[in-house]
Length: 384
Ligand code: NAD
Image (tube, rainbow, N blue to C red; front, top):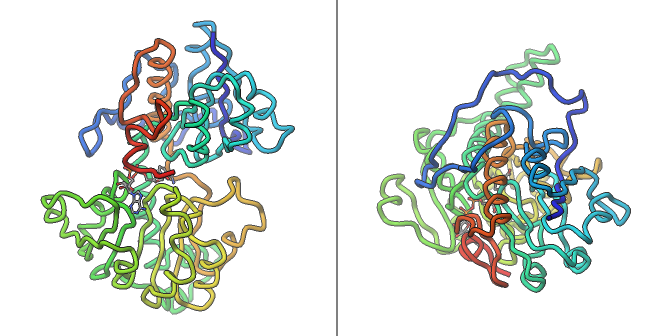
């Protein structure tokens, strides 16, 4: 029998929902790259209901307990006195989400003597020290593809919202104001602008596809060049170096995993090489951008706006400078955990657990670390 330790974000402050704004969510069976959506033997939740917070338990309790496993769910994840730290030493499996990450540091992994599987209910496993996971023989898996479009939609929304000055204008309307000149003195059209993505994997490419109809010029920088047919279809210009791409872009969207090759990529130097008045939208990971360098670039006008939903650490402290810096459109880390996305990553988490508990191999695309090395998607996307 296994012990499964699951860390999820807290329930809504207003209490766990009794009703929902909509009665259902569309069923997505296949993703844009042809990959099929998660397909567990069964699910014990209603798609479109909140399963990502502690009471929702990813819909896993009945499945795990009826098979005799121990299932511990908590949102208390930080510090040595946390429930997570106390429950970790004899856990066989840890489930965590990037939105509310249980940081599996080298020190914590050293204490987790029984741990065999670290499962990310979502995408992005940088909250796990992958080198230490390799050292301790822990398999790392994530539900690849489950929320890629959710994030791509959020990034497109943020790009439009920054360029058109939506949020400050909405605030003005809400507070009873009507000064149109104030609203428009920072408002532009996206049409004709140059937009570049750092990485054109599942999310980056989906952002490009969604922006194409806005009649923008599209650019990308990433480790592996895309097939010519894809470049031609979207009119994508490939750049061998990020420095080269950001010089010609008005907007940069960041869609790369966090690893030693991307950490602090947008430092003072790179930010200073961008066109004056550029916008950055980062829905990938906060540490790809220098925290204070971003604040300075907004304050002195090198950047016209910054938005994203990723912070470090998470939850962000109340005094995190990105909460109040000028021209920001930040949200808490929510893009990949819409109710629509939750239905897919909860089903994917169950699919991975079914495989692991029955000793069957999980899908190659879900694997980040296995057999003491980067493997599957992990070998394509990460370095250590
Ligand atoms: P993916 O594996 O499909 O694509 C990642 C791409 O990044 C790959 O094509 C790889 O070649 C490229 N890449 C890696 N290192 C690079 C480097 N140094 N320079 C340029 N390109 C590089 O992953 P994805 O599904 O598109 O997700 C990307 C990231 O987005 C995740 O790792 C995660 O951090 C983040 N994410 C955020 C949310 C959210 O809720 N905000 C949700 C899902 C994923």
